Image (cartoon, rainbow, N blue to C red; front, side, top):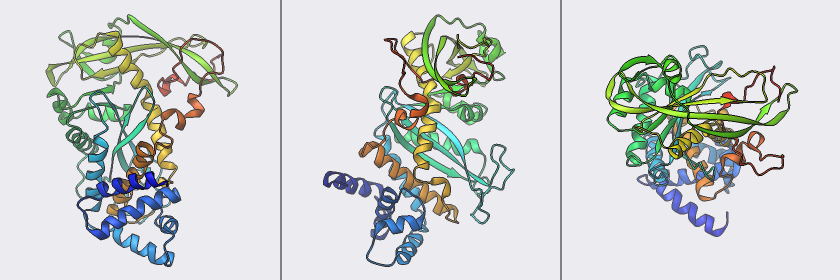
Length: 408
């Protein structure tokens, strides 16, 4: 680090370790430095990267001992959220996604959920809910919070409780600033949860969620499924975006995706007094043979969104959610997070919190690899084709899957 970067790091580590004792503060500082140098979350790699004038075994033992300090995970997580929340503005998109932390060869890690228990995993796994702030203009990412849990932990209730707890923490830390953009899996989980729906009806959360066709909503006083309502929504607005799409020849080709969209007011059956906005997006790939495509449908907590600029902002941000998730996942894997091997649950939570802090320092303060584009360059490269038409490669992943019979 340069001298100015070292000063910034010292200020950051002091805030991250606020409230901890002298020994724990040194531990927090050492782990973050070790992660930055080693690009790893393994304690041995971190110890080696510190290059202390003692045997690596001694440094490894010290770090392992301090990693087990009670309450360290909660303190680090609380302090980091206080730091990251300051960067969240009123309209900042906050992408929320949940993913499994799979441990293929682990058998003795505490509270590890066995293979076959989680439908979406082939190996033993934990669950992680992550919130990432995102600037749709310049693509800058800011990890806000990450929360790990196990369905075998003694305090576990259900996944929706864990996610709702994360949303409440972020909402409180940001004083209500920001808009939660729930990825499809989180949307399906939370919209079926009474506590989330009740919170949304009270205006506690501003959110945009992806809807499946079997969700029921109140539309013009009648209870209908989403696929019934979507056919009744006019789409007066349009935009053409571009995406790299795999052709029948297994080569990615820049392809135009034509979208039309509009909105209607709807309400949730459990909270009929709270107006929401249903946004319907039709899309087509003119160069592909198959033209019958299901619309993409979103639910916004904002009432009566009819203005084109507002709708374009919501749709454009939703189109970028999958890229944000992919980008932050690649950032974590740059530190080999999936290879973490600590045995206890609390130690794993501490390492996740310190990894989040390391990524935040690198992205937000050092400004290294700060944008979605730089982390998903293979699918979001600028067009090779000459022309003045504005391009946006930011469309949902489902629009990339044209099928083997397509012609691009």
